[in-house]
Structure formats: structure tokens, C-alpha cells
Image (tube, rainbow, N blue to C red; front, top):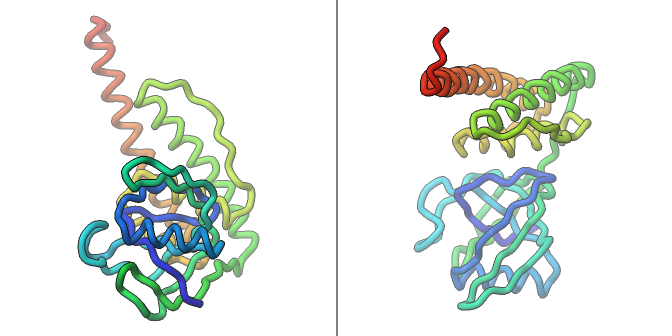
Length: 216
């Protein structure tokens, strides 16, 4: 299948939403055509180049995005909210102007060990809850519950989309079709992030107590 491509500086995961501020003429044209034809487009992370100017080189794996909401703005701009549907691989770029179009192949995640996936999913859900709590605590917010998907595949994408890590790390998670391997990598990332966030929180609390004249 051929798919119009929107190269961005972010990674979209299946099941996740993404707001996009559209202002370049080529992408305004692309979105309008997608709306008229009731078809999706592909969101891909930029590998080389930038969002503006010459067409950038994207990573080969991206996510099919359906348009969920459009808000027309003055001065030839629009806000678009898209929903990630399915991973895909770009087999060939068949058009570069006015915007990229690729011949793509949809990709499907897989689970070969259901028990391992369930056990990892339980671990990831617990680790993410602690990661989320620490983030809130550092920004002086009350901890609150966050609902997470029960399915291992959906959970792994949910967590990946919310990790505060480099986009290339997220891209690697997007490219990992094995759900178990994706969860294993997220376990490593969350463990490291929790250790670093815990140290940051202790430092903040220590500084706060010092400023209040509290002596241990």
C-alpha cells in the first residue's frame, strides 16, 4: 500500500494520540487530501534533516495514523489530533514532493511466550506506577492513580509513549516487534529512570528541609 508520510521529531505508538500543529503548505495539502479521501497517513521520526525545508530522511518504521480531530485556524494553519493504528515499514519512497509518499508494509507485534509476557506486563505496570509517582513528586504534585492497559502489547506501547527518554530510544521500541523484548527493554529503562528520579527527589527534599532549617 502507498501512504503519505508526515516526518516529525517525535514517535507515535499504536493506540496513542498525537496533536500536530500543521502550517507548512505541503502538509496542509496532504491533510486536506487525506480528509477528502478518508484515508490515513504515516507518522515517521526524522532520521536526517528537519521538519521544515527540504524533505527529510525518515526512519524506516513508523505508525499509521488516522485523523481523529481537526481544528481550522487563521493564517492557513490547523491543529490535527491523530490516533496511532499500526506499525509499518517503508519499503520504498515513491514520491518526495510536495510531500513524501512511501510504499509500505504493515507490521504486527508478536508474543511467543504468553506466560513471560504476562509476568513482564505485571512488572512493567508496577514499575511505571512508581515512575509516574516520582515524576509527580518531583514537580510537587499529588500522586494519583493512572489506568494502564491490561494487554501486554498495548501496555508496552502505552509505557513507551510516556517515557521521558530520547526519541531514538523510543524509535527502537517502536521497531521492536517482539512484545517480550519490548517489555524487557522497558524494564531496564524504567529501573534506571526510577533510580535517577529517586536521587533527584531526595536531593530536592534535602534542599527543602535545609531551607526550612531542619537539621537531621
